[in-house]
Image 1 (cartoon, one colour):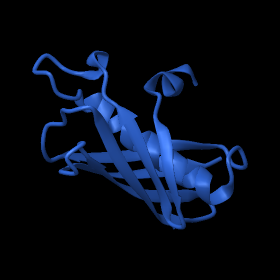
Image 2: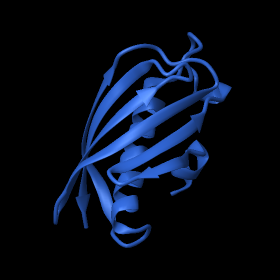
Image 3: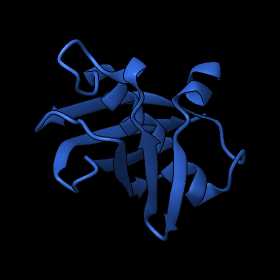
Length: 120
């Protein structure tokens, strides 16, 4: 999907229970107050959860779609990059649930998301 590629999110590390992704902050992702737009934060969480599923099953092995997501925004995100650690909490036959912890470049916990994907 072109939108996903425009985010330019990169998997920095693969873990047995998920992935860590890095996202470079660029001016077009900031809101009027100069911090990361909340919708972009949600997109980072969604993509990190998807990468955790792909890491588990193999890239391209399963098709999936987001069915539910809840994001708690804890603090504004500024700086140069975002780090998101996705934990695949449950990988079932139909549903996968992930927790994504999102940090600013000072390693301050800035948002937490719970993301549910349906395997198609």
